[in-house]
Length: 254
Image 1: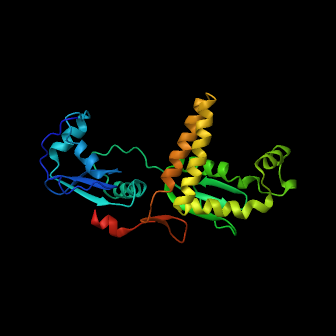
Image 2: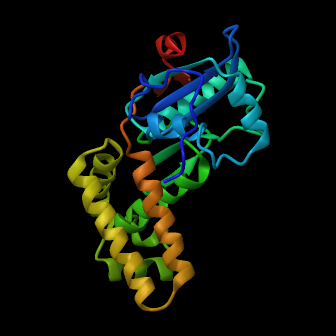
Image 3: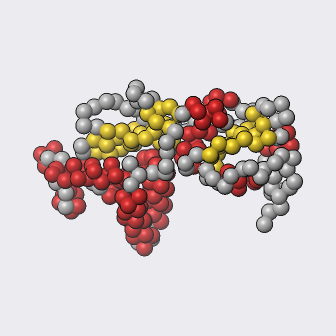
């Protein structure tokens, strides 16, 4: 096990829970902001002898207090971290850009990841989610498990799409049922999440059996995306304009 150096601050209060953390110096200035799925493990890592980033080693020597804010999940912690970085711009964070805010758009004949929210009758948006890649991966997995894009009138599809619909055993009449199944996943129904993850894992395992390793890796990324967007989340929301916001009470507590 890596040796833990004696910190100059009390770390006993740091919980083993998801959240965001702030490193402060003796004058109360914020030096660094981060997030973690396990705050205790992450914060203690800064005092491990194996820490090999000279810049952070210099920062750690200046830390006199660590403040933490717990959240419902690491995804929620990521939103809080983003807001804290925007607000405080700590000197030891090397952020070159922020992960994008993304939604999943569920329409009568499609489920896709999008950056923009446009109010359209019959279209619903889920999120916000942080990061394009995991969100797009989740939407791709949902489209495979619940092929709502094939639930269109036959005359509105290509020959290939009609053949795919026949193979999948779906028609325009199945659209509402598939929309309900997708909604259950995105509303974080545990049973629905378990089902779609298991089905996607089966696709990954089949690709591995066929030695399609790149494909298996792509599907594994989709599984990670499903788990990312279905984590508990309460502080980040879309407001009436479609923009995202974060609860100010958590920012104040940080």
